[in-house]
Length: 367
Image (cartoon, rainbow, N blue to C red; front, side):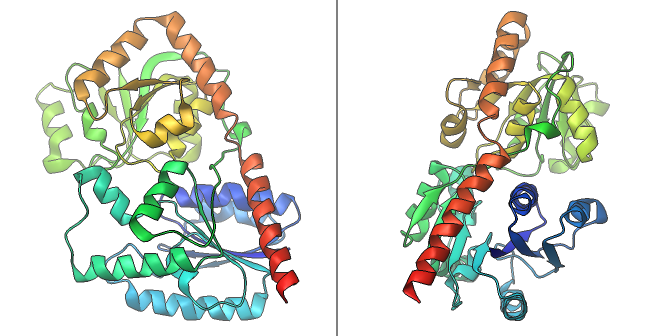
């Protein structure tokens, strides 16, 4: 089987793509991969060189959620058409909404990793104000979501959000994201610090909940160091936030080591369609302290500890209780690891492959 897959190199979709393409390639599936957004660095794309049946076409076309993207979307469509004509795949797997609504003579999957409207509602409590850009964006997403032969989301919560905002597709399924457990280190001795991944300027990640003087133990925040009005630099220069350590962006190898030694992972996100960082931390045997939002409840159930949704005081108290009770912390380290192993890339690939085969068989039967 030959699958043409689109992806973007901005954020977690690229990690998802790497896991899925690697597993599919090991199963003998030929992949034509086309990326958008930013051209990947050599470090981002070196994994592709190890896969003999993957051809890669990186581009810098703007993504559908970006402002002023319409011209790029038209150009990227023309580019995709040329690649499809040359590669002759059996199936199209789009990790963007837009392409699902175009007239391709092949079965189409669209995966809803996230979207602007559900992000805005989660962050602001209401839909975004109408504008020409929002109107065009919504039209593009509705057309692509409803035009797909199969629409997929990484959680039931995200699937429900997409259906609520853009209508019901022809057919829908949930396929949970997965990571390869062998990429992480669960057996290191744990140290007395917590870790979190998030951008201070991203209201969806809500890492600003950690900007507190009363953090009960050293907390390492991974992500861009820019903060609203220089809040962190200003506070630390005044002797505040002494237990918050800003690490900035980390390489995969650096993050792996930090996860391996941290005893607690803190997820502050108020918008998280799936959440790869908590999964990576759990596969490193970190106890998870999570914001109490529906998508994280769906994935982790009772094997983690939640703090009251979006409440910084509750966050501090929850970390304190866990940090001061080594036996309980050890228990939840083990529980998170055990549950995380359910969300592995092997299982994810098998589920996608099952959907591919169903769609291709249906196409052949209808011919």
